[in-house]
Amino acid sequence: LAKTTQPISMDSYEGQEVNITCSHNNIATNDYITWYQQFPSQGPRFIIQGYKTKVTNEVASLFIPADRKSSTLSLPRVSLSDTAVYYCLVGDKQLFSGSARQLTFGSGTQLTVLP
Amino acid sequence: DTAVSQTPKYLVTQMGNDKSIKCEQNLGHDTMYWYKQDSKKFLKIMFSYNNKELIINETVPNRFSPKSPDKAHLNLHINSLELGDSAVYFCASSHPRTYTDTQYFGPGTRLTVL
Image (cartoon, rainbow over the protein chains, first blue to last red):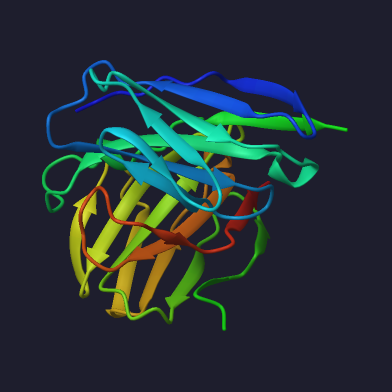
């Protein structure tokens, strides 16, 4: 099972692009990479998911290099309201079986956007 | 039109008491989950049910017992509460039951054990 490592915290200023990197050296062939966002006093919310190369939606972009041992969540022109904890998950599309460690979100990255 | 709802939002109780947290989803999903988030934001799966059947049961004390009366509800009962049970508990749901499918989370229940 792939274990993920993220920075504990990051600071940025309004209007800047923010890149949060997640390391997953043991990622398996069938694993996908998913990012969630959690605002204070709320539950996590899905942001983006990808398998390789680049994925973009209205909220963020996800960059995955060819070896897939890491991924980078990119938030363009952040605002104060992007202050949140960002979680990286790695898991495959198989039905739940055995341990559910793939569903452990870890501690995430606390992004603080400053004015 | 809340998708996943939990009650209560806050729960303050004494050590040794028994308490329950309720969760309901109106998304038509088959799979529901309970997560525990500690003070350091570490979010970990506890249980998962699919169509009222328990499919994930992580290493959780026997004092925690989930109950799913139907696929739209998943309640969490905790016996003999301990100080270490203080945390935020999140309920979530998803349609299929795989590791990659999007989960929809409730607002959380902050449990404080005194």
